[in-house]
Amino acid sequence: MATRLDAATPAVGGEQSELQKLARQHLWMHFTRMSAYEDHEMPIIVRGDGCYVYDQHGKRYLDGLSALFCVNAGHGRTEIGEAAAKQVAELAFFTNWSYAHPRAIELAARVANLAPGDLNRVFFTSGGSEAVESALKLCRNYHRLNGDGQRYKLIAREIAYHGTTLGALSATGIPGLRAPFEPLTPGGCHVPNTNSYRWPEDRDPLWAADEIEHRILFEGPETVSCVILEPVQNAGGCFTPPDGYFQRVREICDRYGVLLISDEVICSWGRLGEWFGAQRYDYQPDLITTAKGLTSAYVPMGAVIVSDRVAEPFMEDTRMFSHGITFGGHPVAAAVAMANLDIFEREDLCGHVREKEDEFRSMLEALRELPIVGDVRGAGFFQAIELVKDQETKESFNAEESETLLRGFLSGALYDHGLICRADDRGDPVIQLSPPLIADTPEFEEIDRILRSVLTEAWERVVKH
Image (cartoon, rainbow, N blue to C red; front, side, top):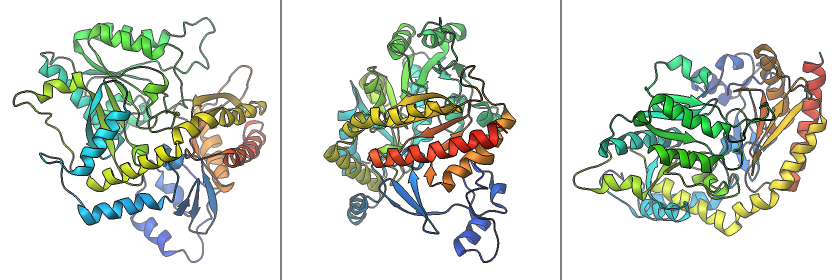
């Protein structure tokens, strides 16, 4: 989200680089308070290598967020660039609108082979929001073809992030992101998430799953198109599902004829130690949305992976899915994805995450000895630390305190110490860590050293003060 790096980037003064001048005049950064850089330099990252990136001044940073949960294979994989160059020489671009080309065909087959169950059809997009938008439209269209055209509502979880296009934003459950653009595409309904940190001790672990059934019944099952859930919810700080949660959700969806979308824009391609998060938690969705790690973000690409059952009505007679994206299945992007997956298989990156997950998590769990650390949660190389004012009572920070803690100190201090991660308060204040899947003991130790130092200082300067 928006950051202010007062403590990390130099104040504007003297001669500025040409890049700084041009950025200040022309670049509009995403989810960024642009006024934060009126009197401070913009952080400009110019090079990447493995788990590290470098700024314009040559300073090195551990990329503890994989840029944005997406550079899964790590930075600087020149073979991926070579695959792109080879594809440019062969066929730089052709559309998938009524035409096909070899790389899109090969990639679709490879993705379908890795996906769970009968998810055998792949509809390519340019990124995650487009994948979610496409999946929501596909679900509505599917029901309409089956004579259930009144099914247009979707059920998502509170605080969940599913994208920023108007349709995807109707699924996103973060009020601050929705409010500036309302009214949204109609039909978005939200239920509690699986953040059990402050649940009553006697609450049924499957309570949040049953709330989905309650909402379906409240809305009227004949009006509900789909349920969209992340295997591990990103916004709010890596909420994992209780045992049996997704099995219960699958039963509920089947009971009422509702489609289940597993939104895996982050949770696929090894982030949780499996090709797909649905495999980690052993459930079978009707659709999977994916992006980010599919190409390790070397080029933009996303996809909707669809079950045979959902695809079938669109394969009959003169029917079609009346939806398309110019660059969906782009030949260069598909070639990059194939090269990326070659690296995954050759180096067994999913296996590496499974092997190293406990070490990474144990390092983070040890931070509980710091008074500001309330909860540690997540899965694979996708973890979060929730920050509190009081460990015993789990007292959190109000909005003003969160602003001071996160943007007034933590974001800048972590960056200044050479760690890129996410200090965020969509929900309660958290620090999220999602390093490249090649990260190992030395990177974990560096993360530990920086977090201990900065969180200790935060407690002394911000909380106790």
